[in-house]
Image (cartoon, rainbow, N blue to C red):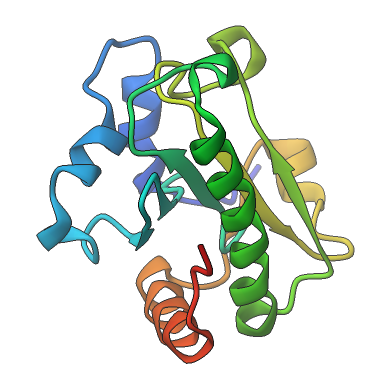
Amino acid sequence: MDRNNLWAPWRVPYIQGLGQKSPCFLCDYIRMPSQDRENFLLWRTAHSVVVFNRFPYNNGHLLIAPLRHIATLDQANSDELHEMMILVRDCQKVLTPAIRPNGFNVGMNFGRCAGAGLPEHMHIHVVPRWDGDTNFMSVCSDTDVISQSMIELYDQLIDLSRQRHLPDV
């Protein structure tokens, strides 16, 4: 019987890192403003950052995180909470004309058992969705198909952000 293979070597670092204690990549990115493009860090604001998820569920999957290394909502102050919600809105504002999703999932995971890949630094997921985007690849083979390169979309969102003066915080 012939087998077809779908190669996704970019997932190896994620798979190999599961269960290992590693430095906080968000804190690393925050400390390296000169490497924002390489780290796919889209926006910096007074209290937060917006960065592409390197292991996305869908094209345009963004993470919004406070600058402070905190794990839970009760550790966040009102300014951080308010700004992160404004950034959820602004992410939708720039993703909508760029990739035309039909909707969005917005959510947070607290604790590894709840699905948090980085439980020590809270963050909000903004995941663009399209009608019918859950197909046999994700349902049957636990494989995500990403249709656009991250660097191409990063450049597009930077350009749209400048045109629309986003983030608006």
